[in-house]
Length: 615
Image 1 (cartoon, rainbow, N blue to C red):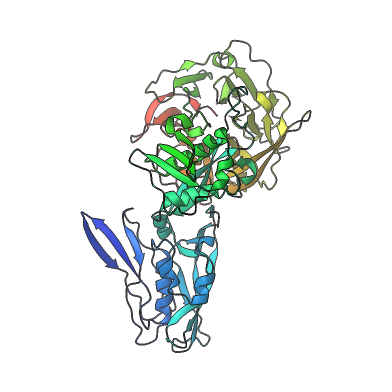
Image 2: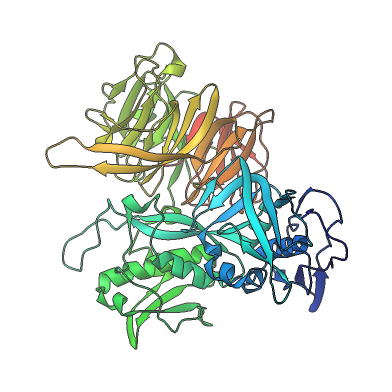
């Protein structure tokens, strides 16, 4: 901590780290603090093996206030489920009023402490310090992660108990604060799943065929070693984050929660998890119960592969049971939809395709007019059902739409840009799950984000309140409620993620708005290319200020997922991925199409440009 210390202050370990190594348990105490100095940092714990458990140590008898503050900060990074040891560093009133789950502030390094020298002496009866650091991110009460920057300052006050003469903290910030490495050790990202509210709800048998609801991933951060399965289930039942709330729904009836007697959840030896719920859940019908079970199964399988079936109960009654193989018939999920083909533009400027995931290198022209080469293409997009495709002409001026399942002429362009240069005209297009086509016109005189219903007709201008800059690339997520935009402003290109809201009234043109645009790559100065690479993950090509081009993954909330970094590749102009993470990345680099099979290096496929998977 580095706060001023009085003579005779005891120094000792603030926490115990337990290592399981070959069946032997090793105990390691934290280093003691220096005896002098005004401003120091509490060192973050180095990244450790996931099996390592860290337990806090209670305050030592007659510990000086500087050690009390350090011990408290160390206790925040322990695996104590309810922060009971951390509360021992607080007065009774402070412990009662402190809400550690209200927020988490993540700093670049461990929090530093700066003592207040205005009469601040450890032999007095009160003591004040300021916690300092550089903010990296915050996690709110809904467990939602947001990148942050700027300085952090938090006031901590201690007083000496009149009877015991022990120092305790009586004023402190709500929530917890810790360094980035401690946060990465203590917390993990998990996708909770809800359903897009603009998709049709499943009907009972005999009511006619309807489209299944689309599952939407809502990532949250939970404590890694504090019964994460039970944490995640409680979190799912609490409802979606505010960012997605307006466009998703939960199938759990309002007020549904775990039964009162539930302490911990765990699957049995047949990989089935039984989830006891309160009586609110019993109001759901059979179809709704299946959706509830699907939400749980999708969420828990994102946490662990150990769950293959979910059974819901209320009291002594079984509500429903859903296995892994039946869940995909209840709801659609982008990561479970495997495309048939990879598409790109060949040397003859035609749209061609290769079987997705194959080792083939000989592409074939697609059926229909876009594969005949009558229109030279610069970029393309293929609908998610792989029945239609859209192509941009070589000059980026005209947008064409054609069938991939029937012959016919291409016809006139469905959209034309009036931008004076190629860079000021149309972006590559993107299809959503509704079969609508998205594209941006970069004309400086009239920059617009546009949507064409069914890929035809009069374009609808999408409202983008708060957008500051010009859209350079567009990719709609498989869930249909998120959109990724590369936006340029003052020479900097950033990746922004927004929420799509639709308001369709009978007899009126649809109203479409993109709201709450947030940066997913705050550290990158230039984003060159991006593509969805999971239900809540994207692959991004870009560079930091003064750095070189790199390829990496980002979550929709701006955090870095726990995934291996793709092998380096220079000169990447375009990149393609799919929500099905089993399929290889594909890129256009140095005038070649290349792909990255899992665990291998980039391999040449063939000459060509503009690789895309459906979407």
